[in-house]
Image 1: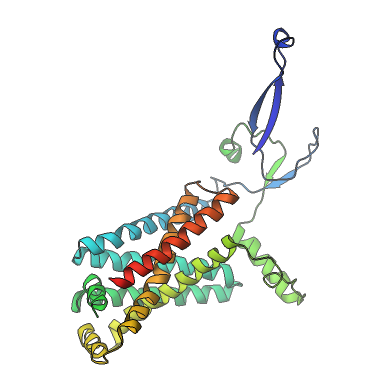
Image 2: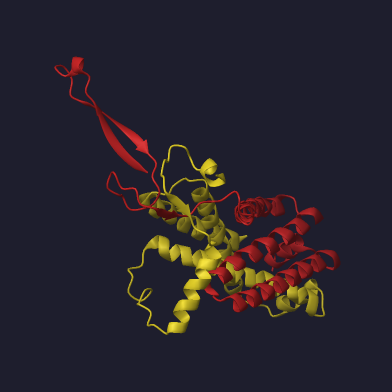
Length: 154
Length: 158
């Protein structure tokens, strides 16, 4: 965002007040400033509505934040109202949040088509097993909320 | 043209050509070209001056990975290990560990969780567009660190 001061010089005010400077916001792409009169072609990244995959990335981003907020709310909920519903919600939110988080780590550090595919597949297996394990614990054992309470009473 | 309709009418850039590749394809091309050429990599982490936001960012990732590992370990143990949770707790109780050691262990569990939680809230604030100025980054960073220590101490004492 560029702030370009534009000076208004109404002739009536010239004698009395100093020039009025009013900043005007001018939106510009994050590119180098070009000289006026430049009309070359410039490659830009757009979020094309005509391409099919772009909405998916945006939706994924928003979903990540939604799950984060959900998980944040579940922490005090688990303390004040430990119950089966909170147990299963925690299992789901924890598994999903960590799956997506580790997914970002894989995207950042694992390069190459084949290697990234394998890493993502391994991650999916791990997350699925984790979720299954947490649900099993909730069903057959004391459940996440009770387990933390019991652990803390040690 | 469909892309021109999406562009803000205030931005009147003519002769703008949208790229035909996705970010993923471009990253792929970059890594394919550079890993094959065996070019030396400039020093980066070893020479760049570390800042608080930089350190806190990698700690956020580190605590996240560690916590995920812990959760996965717990989930997999539930599937693979033979006994109930109570049995394992009773076993640990029978070890009669010193209270100081138990407090330290609780602190060690609580600390990464609290750091990731408070810094996570800081991240969500950034996603809302708040607190992105450089001085605010440092201020919010210090607040997160203080809250982390206080809440970890508090939780470990419970």
